[in-house]
Amino acid sequence: MMNDFLRTGLLLPFELLLPVLGILLIQSQSPINSLIYRSFLGSIAALIYALIGAPDVALTEVMVGTLLSSLIYIVTIRSCYTIVIIVDTNNPPHQNIKDCLKLVFDELHLKIEYQPEVFSDSCADNLVFLSSAKSSGSPHALIYNSTCFFEVQTLLDDVTLTDSSKFLEDNLTLCLLPSQP
Image 1 (cartoon, rainbow, N blue to C red):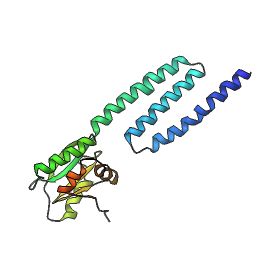
Image 2 (image 1 turned 135 degrees about the vertical axis):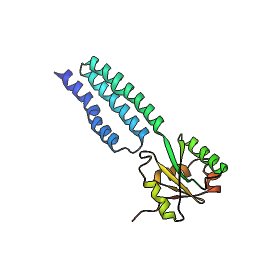
Image 3 (image 1 turned 90 degrees about the horizontal axis):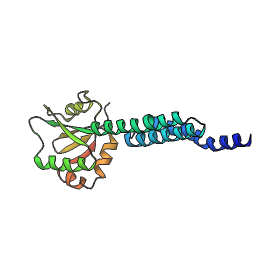
Image 4 (image 1 turned 120 degrees about the vertical axis):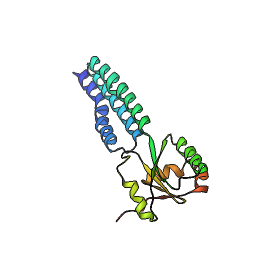
């Protein structure tokens, strides 16, 4: 009887950790943090299964729930990490700007995909390209004249924190997409 209470007492902290990790996983905006939370969630679940006497379920959870799903998630994250930069077809960025962008986004482990569009004279009309569904899912940026507009604040923050951003800022003004009315 005392052994059952001891086992329950040992499991309780782990059982309380599962919903906390689940909430963190659901609310996480970073794919890397989500991967970490999912790995911990699977590992703790496997530990609980092993402690309550289900080693086969624990082994399955470790192999499939933690290792295999984490591996698939890593491959997916790596293949999806692309930034789409919208550029003017008639006035593409100079090679030195492309080289600076490559340095910055290599440091962030992002591939660059340039999407040429025919720009108008109005900056507001061109910014509509950022909300286009052509490359939905990827973060976007738009180079108009000597300004690079970023779709989201987190991407702009990440770019400005890179070691290579000073080279980029010598050639381009970096700013967030103005809010649309």
